[in-house]
Image (tube, rainbow, N blue to C red):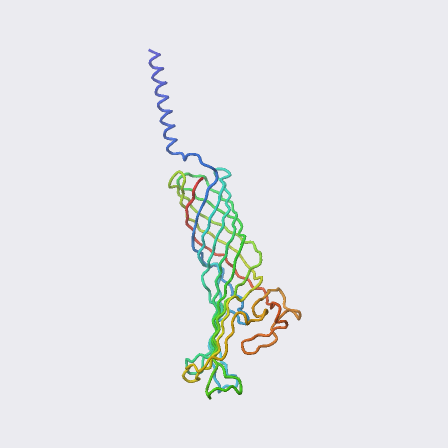
Length: 342
C-alpha cells in the first residue's frame, strides 16, 4: 500500500516540477549578450534663454528707427527690444551602445546629432518719417548643428515588462557650428560728382553667411524614462531628458558673401544701372576671419575705419579680433526609441 502511494507522490512531484519549469521558461527572457544597441529621436525645448551674442557691430536687438530730416538728430528710435533665446531648441537623434554590468546598472555610450531651430539674432529697420519707405535694414538669423558624445550610467529596478530607469552622465561636443545668415539693404546718396541723373540713390543689397567654431567644452545630461518589453530582444522606451551644454566661441569665418550696388530712381525705385559688386574673394583676411579673445586691447586687430561697405582694420592681412561670446545648446526634451539586445 505504501509503495503505490510513494510512487504516486513521486509522479505528482515530477509533474509539478515540470509545470513550474515550463512556466518559468515562458516568463523568463532567454539569456542574451550583456551588450545592447539603442536608437532614439526627440525634440528639445529651450528652458534657459539668454541674450544672444552680437552679430559683428550689431547688438542682439530688434530696433526700429525713423529718419526725419527736419530734426537736428534725424534718427528717432520708435522701438527697441533685446533679443533673447537659446540654441537648445531643436531636433536630436542618437545611436547608443550599452553594456549591462548587472540587472540594475548599465553603462551607455551615445553619439547624438542636433539641429537647432533658427533664432532671430538682430533686426535693425530704418524708415522715412510718415511713410513705410525703407532706407535700411539688417536681419540676422542663427542656428546650430552639432555632434556630441554622451557617456552615461543607467540605473533601474531590473523589471522585465515595464522597467523605469534614470540615466545621467556627461556631454562632450565633438563637432559643432553656429551658422549666422545676414541680409542687409540700404539706400544712400551717390558719391559727389558721380555721372548719374538727379534724384538717383545707390541701393546696396548684401547676403552673408558666417560659421562660428566653438572651443572645447563639457556639459551635463540626465534623463528619466520607462522601457517597455515587446519581445525577447526588443524594447521600446520613452524618456524626458535635460541637458546643460554651455559653449563659447573660438573663431569665425565668412563662408558666403554677395554684395550688389545698384543705381536706382529715388522716387520709383526703378533700376538705372549696376554700379559694382563684391564677392567672397574680395574680402580682406580681417573681414573674412575672426579670432575671439577674452580681452580687447591696443594690440588687438580691431576696425579703424570704413569706406562704403569695406571695413579697414589695423592689419587687413590678419584675422580680426573680437570678444568671446557664449551660447547654450542644452534644454529639456522628450525622446523615444527602440532597444535591441544582442
